[in-house]
Image 1 (cartoon, rainbow, N blue to C red):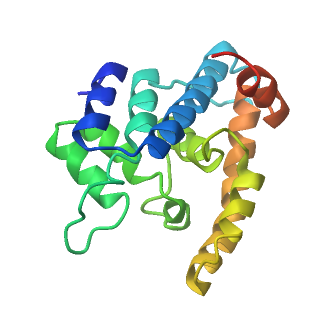
Image 2 (spheres, helix red, strand yellow):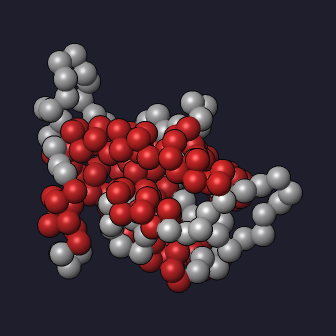
Length: 192
């Protein structure tokens, strides 16, 4: 089962999602929906022998809206983000959404067992890495993380993740026939 946008908003209230996180997830959903639309418009850029790209738009939107639903929820022993969100979503019967959310955290791209594989997972992952409280792009998002006075192991994780996130960014840009300037023109300066 995949929740509607309105059901996601009900869950924001139920789990007391902080205002700043509401802004963030709305922007992630806006960018993720943009990628889905670009994939649907034209997939002729795929290399020969590749199948047409098919993406579940409802799944992408729900996962984008709910990927941080655990930010104000007490974690159980051994849980970290996004484990708590995955548990909550599974308990609610949103198993497909939970699987996309499981693969959205920065460190997931470094683990072959957790790295985003499906287009839905890749889109939500990248949209999250391009967004703070507005869509700012991968490069700027990583610069902000580096400025956060992180422990050495977190900096190593950033260093290892960055080239993989950039490769995913290029993969999605290629399939959607877009670049960051297109995103800025079509989303950031629009009234949508």
